[in-house]
Image (cartoon, rainbow, N blue to C red; front, side, top):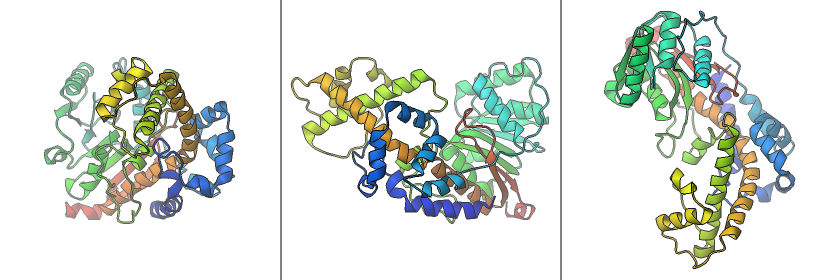
Length: 398
């Protein structure tokens, strides 16, 4: 894969279609593309609820359906295809080796380690949590591992697990975003499985001076800790991305249980119902919608709206027809779901652009880079893995 050529071609296509993927339907009642693409707008409105649900859970089927209305989407999807990385055989797990690791996490860690080269230098697990990945690397490749984590409670759990299982693993309680945290990178192979936002970007930003031998990075939650607009990692990047665009790359529920999807649907309908009521009272305004405490959804719709009205300084009518406004929220949610099918069709392309920006940034800082998948999206949609190895001629720079 020519990473730079793919990055530039994908960047061009995303830029040419930004009127489709930039507006968030939650905030934009009628995105402008609806006027330019009436056939697509009509087809979306005609979809029944079952089709909307199916397309929401099956992006490939949705992309196939949308291709008739958005021909360029076929090329975006083709450019977004990433091959699986070569796999290696792992030794059988020792008795009780994986105790304390949830099943899905265990499968992700196993897949990650199976699809990286054998580690030959001391290792650093970045943003380690309970140190599950670090223990697996230490046991698989017989190398000492330092696991860096900020949360003291998680550090304590990681230390207890390492001691119990007899693993050569040092637990370091430190902030990965500080200079002192980066001091531990030098001379090591750095592992980051789903390190969020700036936690994975900081590795690349500092790769030319930190002195790591290698990186194995699977990015996640691109919006966390990001400046607005997003500050690219590579010199060829020209897309201007805000927080909404960065969130788009990770808005998938493919691994969420049905009860969570049902709850999220209700939460979104209530928010949209409140926004419609607020618009009725104050007129059309564009405001950021701040996160709502989960406990506010435990009562009724009218309790939810009253709490929000106090927070947002909205003077509600004396006796709103609560059932009608809740119905408006659910109707608006149905419309949002249909519009999001179009926006979400560019989700993987945007995510790959971000990961390619990371990979190219690592290459510009003296590393040979390979990009591929380490598992299927049914295990985790965040299944992209960047493998960087320091080039011999770049060692003198550090």
